[in-house]
Amino acid sequence: MPFQALKCMKTVIELDDVSKVYDMDSVKVEALRGIDLEIKEKEFVSIMGASGSGKSTLLHLIGLLDRPTKGNIYFDGSDTAKLSDADIARLRGNGIGFVFQFFYLYPTLTARENVELPMTIVETDKEKREDTAMQLLNKVGLHERTEHYPAQLSGGERQRVAIARALANDPSMILADEPTGNLDSKTSMEIMHLLANLNKEGKTVVMVTHEKHIAVHSKKIIYMKDGKISEGG
Image 1 (cartoon, rainbow, N blue to C red):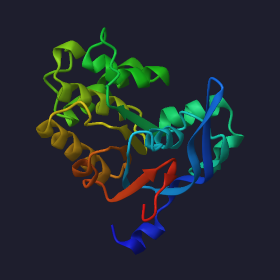
Image 2: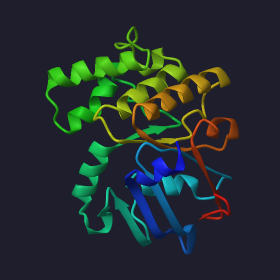
Image 3: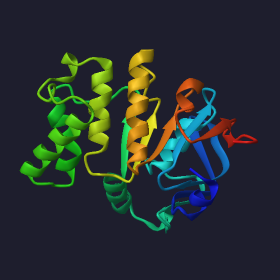
């Protein structure tokens, strides 16, 4: 995307001097230190770094799954520090879709029922839930596997279900934490093409990965080191 066009884009997430400290028994672990970051709508951003560099912690804060120890996080211009936990949950449920390395599908639910789950939480009516789930599973190429359980699906198919589930409430942003970490190279490329297409359709995508050949599918790469964004990242 041309730089001038990107400048005109709305900022979806802004982190201002954000730090995160975890209490591990008697030891304080500084996972993030003084992070300043803007993510604009329709960007495709990869976050890279060694294990323990803070990349997953950063993604969790971007996704409002956790609150910072210090600093401020703004979502669509709103200071999330001023929002209640219920407000945060509502914002997260409607505005952000999550895709994880280990899929986290419910084993006793079919692919369709797993995709319906986020819509059930926000009390979407049954007919709309079913129609939307079927459309999304068709979108990710699983129209013939809608009534299969996770154990009956391959790793790539399970990740496709997870992506369909992330899209259930039509979020503006997709966050993916090592989405290809458990997949073979061919299936990884298929998942990356799917995420790239979602970005082309207007979704903001932020992805954590440690694989450079995966990160190059994004439009911007942020490098993390020792809890900070490294020089040039």
